Length: 173
Length: 158
Image (tube, rainbow over all chains, first blue to last red; front, side):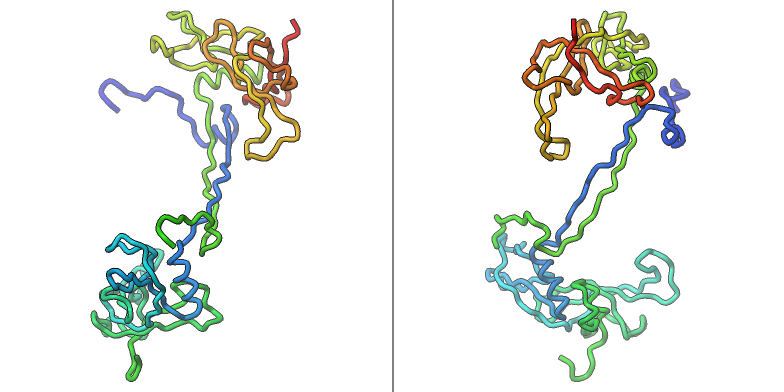
């Protein structure tokens, strides 16, 4: 409080005053329904995940293959032109060894997360995901990886249709 | 697909539906509390009086808009008011058609600054600016201290 104000004017009301109806009041529940869409490009991207495919958008002006796909080229200020399938192999750009889970709870065994740039997309374009079948000591930047997909009947059209990216094996693409 | 086209139907795309919970309880405030309690318990309509300006405010408020004085006196609103503006609603609050159109009006009272927006309990063809009206209240036992304790304004029989 300030020097001149020892107590703010007004009437303080607690939850009980309201719930017991001690004061007149208006109660309202807005009907605030919403439907949030992923947009043209991401919706197609998610649907293709269900099919075990990764798709990008190509801009014919700058020739870049944009991934994740978007309908507008931020470099050329023009709509992108075509859908382009890309591969599910790539290179680890950066990673974290996290001792916090997705709810920020502390965990004993760390999860490995990071960004993988995907083959077929323009350089440095890719997605964030989990890494698996490797330890925190084995993971490194520049490592070649491949998507480990869920079986098709478990896919839901989600980025989690890929369980994680695992090390690329000998002889794989 | 050009960037001039807009997606207006989200359900055509991958989408997530939800409901924003934004429940609220709105209290009437100091002057509003006096007004609604008097309405509920005594069936009276109160205005707040500024003795300095000689002004009465409806709905009542705690400060005079002209001189900023704090208002603590309340006076009864005249028994009859006049229709200052009128409209006929053919849809309800959610936009659904009404079987019987509702007449709504801004009702003012002589000598009172302000007024009340409420239903007019008369057919649309009788609802005209200048018509004298009086409030029809719900029976005391069903009044809860809300503006709906007034069922509406009906034509004064004077």
